[in-house]
Amino acid sequence: MITGLFVGFLLGFVLQRGRFCVVGAYRDLFLTKKATIFIALFIVIALQSVGVWILHDLGIIAFKNREFYWLSTIIGGIIFGFGMVIAGGCATGTWYRAGEGLIGSIVALFCYALGAAMTKYGALHFIQENLNVYTTRDSMIFQTLNVSPWVLVIVLCLATLFFALKELSKPKLKIARLKPKKEGISHILFEKAWHPFVTAILVAIIAIVAWVLSTWSGRADGLGITTPSANLMMFLTTGNTGIVDWGVFLVLGIFIGSFSAAKLSNEFRFRLPDMRTLALSACGGILMGFGASLAGGCTIGNGLVQTSLFSYQGWVAMIFFIIGAYIATYMFIIKKNVNAGFTTLAGGQYAK
Image (tube, rainbow, N blue to C red; front, side):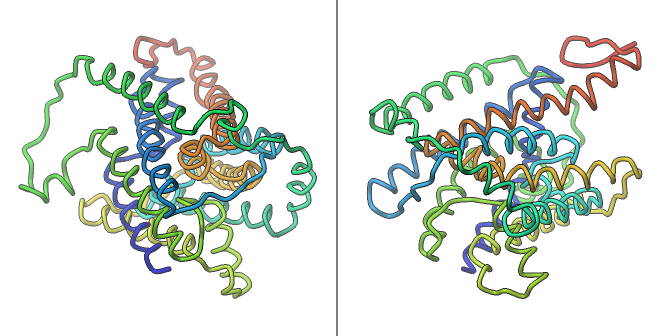
């Protein structure tokens, strides 16, 4: 199980240095009309789909036969999407930003794990049980279409390649940069800004490796944040070591990897937000944990992993994550700026 710590460390390091957070990708679509990070998400999904289906066909990994609880996924998706915007980060974003010393993210992380534990094991579990009676016959998209999953893999890869090349072909703004303080590999690892597409490729490789190492540990799954976070909370409160698995080590590794990257790049410092932001972080964290548990996963477990398997749960959850994120973005950012007398300019900027 210690390999979970290693994979988590790599993931936390890459996420922190690449500033890779799903909530930012969703918000950019609404606020700045930029799709760079959103396309990067699909690079992760497309590359991971190639890797995991090769591993599956070789018999190295196997996929769980999950039922698609459609109503639970829809409701949970909207709640999670809403919560991650007001919390200021998605599940992994909260973990890696907590590793940077952000007090708001630490509060959101605690509340996220608490909300997930309450929904999976505690007082809110009855809601999940009642919603999970609504299921569908097929759980995978290729089952309904009666085609090989490789048809969907090829279509996804070609579409992603098209939009990635189109994005790369856009003229780049020239930005004045300070003279590097570090040289060589140190400059690349701890100082240079990483392109979202480079970060996406690294995340995809880590996600593929995670499937293999997690399977070897007896956990037949890939990257996941919600259940491991809930299990960690349950272990800390009950002492039950039986729920400490590869996934728990994974999320701990994300925190350690992010902390290491932040310290080595001189980005670690404790930052205390105002009380309103702190309250929103707590509320958003609870909503994220509750919503992700209902939906069967967060923006990683559903939005990056289940989508690569072409499960209905993954793609439906991602759609409603975006809807929930838009509702929160409109309520707390767009509407606020409009009411304050700002108007939207090109590029999503606001001006009087």
